[in-house]
Image 1: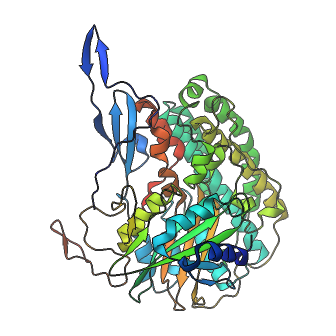
Image 2: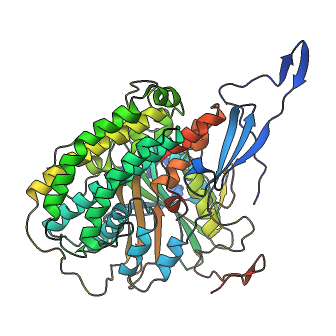
Image 3: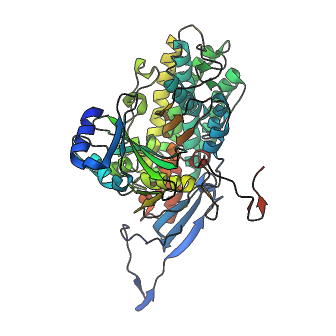
Length: 158
Length: 395
């Protein structure tokens, strides 16, 4: 399935949840509404003609304009096609639906995105920090991150 | 953000909460045990919080991050793309060559740089040698997990030969910084090709020797067959990759299915687990996939050595790398599976954002699924069969 066909399928089915797209680049992407991410991803996974059963990567991004993003790299083992989905949320209220019920692998990736960017994934079964200590302050990969001066009495900046 | 975690109820052998002993009823309780952070079977600083009911694992929760070295943050703060390569080296320190390659490939795809044919061959040779070296570590230490010490020594003896080849090429034995954007740092030294050919001839019979020592050992089979079974659909749902995925019978290898470099020019086969001694997707299947992949790697190396062209080893690239604004996700097959780099460029001379999708990180996340219902003694073997490198899990 080409990216254009995929976009048409998604637009006709989800309408307003498909916000924007760019298909003429090397890796075409479609921007979706983060608050409807789960149903869109579930459809993409289950629909026989798309069958995106393999989530390669899920990354958090700070776009440095007051928004955070979640980028899903999906691929299909059966059809061998790929698509990139992007969801946007604001930095003040960073909420996005969790897709860990769709792809098990998203569980840890979402925890990492929460850890590094503070994106809260609604419906995630176990949203804790994963790489940093539980009592760390702030989310280090945000562009406006300021490192804390002391962590448990140890000086942090070097 | 600590949320209370409900205990899973779907484990395989759920015993009754009330056990009977000599006519009396005894209440049993679940117990939480910490394995690690330095337990020898965890292959690094990994902590497993296991909830057990007697000898049976109800749930295993991996706690990672002890080796977190902020790869992504560092990469954003470097002033140059090339400076990040040594950091990529240190992610999966058992397979540095493959990491370098994946990283360099991401930048090259972004910049649309074509590398000379000779470079592709050198990279394939290095990556496959590294695959053998990495699998030797995995298989050797797996023997130790099962209580067999000798195969470990045999593996490290052979791995030494490969490290000698690497040392000959770039001076380093573990962290190479050899594969650069647009090429490699040096051409192959004199005598490399002969020595590599000698290694292939030397190594082929050693695989059989290793199989006789460990793989088909009856005790080893009894310890690993039917243990830690990872069903095909779970493997795909958790995006497992590498021997972990192929062990579950999925015919999938990025060298063939998402082709890069010159792998299409060589004859080799994707190896999958078939459940020869147990169930498809058990620990033994993952083990045998690694063994057979070494054979295939030798095959690839021999073909590459025989047909390596002459030429330049660095393509003409700008002194300062400045990709166009945009983003790209590039994935390659490392010994552990799919290593992907998601790179965002804003047009400046350094990364806007890079995410490393480590195969060990993703493969480890399936551990709770495959260890539920297993015995504590088997957990050691299940963790070993995942073949994690904590440097890559934590980055």
